[in-house]
Length: 106
Image (cartoon, rainbow, N blue to C red; front, side, top):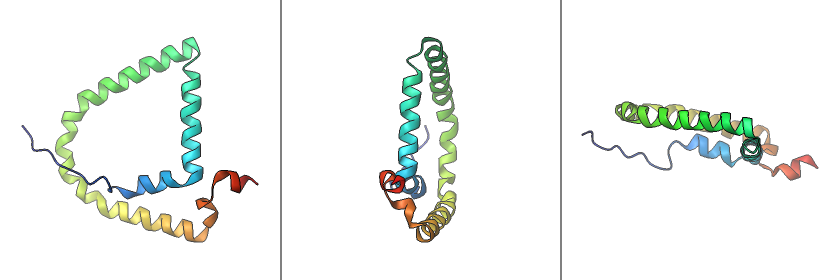
């Protein structure tokens, strides 16, 4: 049995910071809402159900195969740090990205 590798919940930081941007968060929320609403249509819902089950099966089968790759996760830290610095640049050059979407629309 392979030893469990623990990754800090604070890492990677970039996806968390990106999702904290109001426009990104709102866009993802809208996409999730539309996806759930689309599932209400019988044929679309059936197709999405099949796709979800297929994806769950694939993830379940692939997870044990991907576990050995976790030992290389630390090598991605420089990429995460670079992406965070670029996000800092964007926030500094365009502070509007940190404002609530409702405020930007006005």
